[in-house]
Amino acid sequence: MTTVLNVPPSLDDKTFETVLEQLAPVPQDAKVLLDARHTRWASPYGLTALLTLAQTRAERPALYVPESDDTSSYWSRTGFFRFAEEAFELHGAVPRARPSTESEVLLEITPVAKSEDVHDVVGRIQQKSQAILVKELNIDAKATMGFAMTLSEACQNIVEHAGRGGWVAVQTYRWQKRLGRRVVVIAVCDAGVGFRESLETAQGRSRGDRWDDGMALEEAVIRGVSRFRDPGRGQGLAGVRRYIGRWDGKLSVRSGTARIAIVPSWDDDVPLEEKLPYFPGAQMQITIPERIADR
Amino acid sequence: MINHIDLSSVLRRTVCDLYTDLVTRPTGAAVRDGIEKQLAELGDHTLTVIDFSYVGLLDYSCADEIVAKLLMRSAAAVADDLPLREAYFLFRGISESHLDAIETVLDRHGLAIVAQSTEGSTMLVGTVGDRERRAWEAMCRLGRSVPADLARETGIEVEQVGEVLDTLCRRRLVMRLEEGYMVVGGMA
Image (tube, rainbow over all chains, first blue to last red; front, side, top):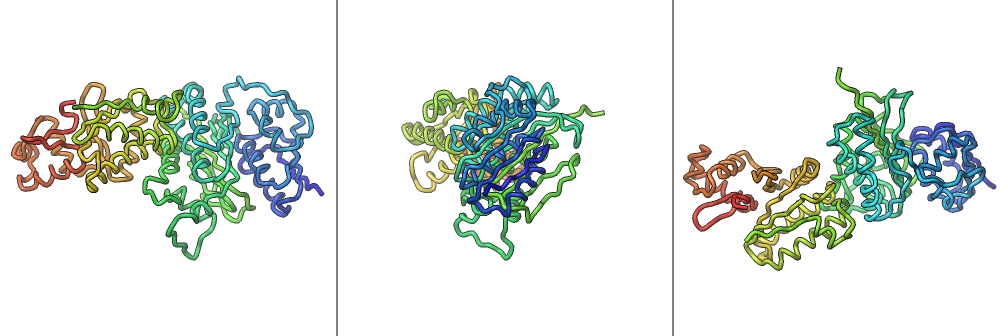
């Protein structure tokens, strides 16, 4: 029997949780069909998380692609279908693949599994990000190197800790409802071991009474703890935190059953959300808003 | 003798001839290994310019592998009486974005380096005590110095100057010469 999971009309980090809630009672080896026919919009997180979800299933899931030509065409330009063709049984009209020429797709959906992939991602992002960040988001030219560093460290989290490949995508768009400004968003998703299991492999690690996904996220994201004993480890996420702090950005990381966020003043998210439906690996989103000139 | 190591050349030689960015830990470890092999051929008592001029991006992982680990392994080699035991480093061509990553990793490990600007002036980067910094900056002004010069210039008690100089020498920020002391980069 196939279980149908409805993909919401607007698919982002928050609404993806409704997909996971539907998925939670479904046995891991059961067939699922993701129905995205009525989906009109998806963030980079939404698209990379869909691919990640497919990786977690024992049986290849099915996906009904969006009925709206605009939407499916946009998904195509993000590179989604290039990987979805393998990850899902696709149903509906899949637009022909075309390379993205639009400025809003800063980095098409790109697989990340090894160090070379990070070099590729960083190399591709630098030229394009310079123009977008400075001209469209009014971010200081100096920030573009920091942006590439942030992307590099976020991707390395997959290479160093996930134990399997994941996905990265970077886009800009106008976040009208929440912010009324343009934002640039990095999404990095994997279905690997996740933060808790990664930290559990640390030698000589003593666990207190409370040890769960939320605490593992606090240790890694807030305190810079790593599974490696090398004191130089754990600086990547600390660097990401510093960068988003400097540019009034937002960082959220979901792993297992918890989600932690560094929340800027323009957002009303909660710092830590627990008891979410279980989802393997780690899913990270970094949002940098357009800068408004000081009045 | 002053040696010169262009990091972008080491990157192309040891990892991939298409890369210009120093990103990821494996890349950093491979580049450091390349540097150490070059240094091993030079023997003891070396001053090496590590040149970042043609490096694009440097991330925290690479900064940790290349800069921090190079310093720590060099210090460990001194303790274990292994090669590299008199290795001094001068870091050149560091951009503002490189500096961000380098300062972060140096602070994390409590390390410091001497960096040289394109104009030739030198500066300390990283974690250095107040007395040591004052003495180091005084030596930059004075050139080759003896403890009495430094005591006069900095106001540090003569008895304490020796201790400060020992610390700076141990951290490879100052070189002990036959007559006096000189900051690393003072003649590079």
